[in-house]
Length: 109
DNA sequence: ACCATGACGTTGA
DNA sequence: ATCAACGCCATGG
Image (cartoon, rainbow, N blue to C red):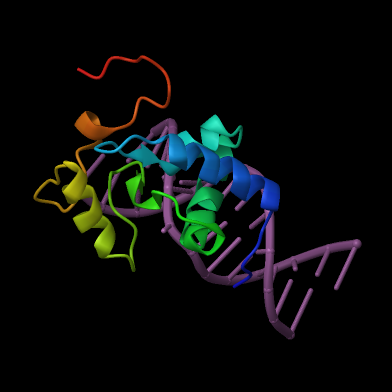
């Protein structure tokens, strides 16, 4: 697995990830969309996989559209819980309540 | 250069 | 909820 895909892309993604406030979670698609890569959702996940290699980012606040944490990363759950993010009995985040507005006012509830 | 496969996904039926 | 199809990027033969 290569450590670097696109320094520019990584910068955009990590830049958005930093925007994610604590106690909230964002989806790969949402991030991909904010950077202008709506279809690159999967690519975002791949970058986050090595995100720690580029620097310290709250990549733990990123989950899939289902709110499910990343596989091979059991700590992510503990990290989110520590921020106040609640999990469902399915082990998924209630993105319906904790999904980041993505910078838009949106209606959180 | 070409084809086939994989990755922390997303959407539609 | 479940199954199938799509999408971009990178890798290997």
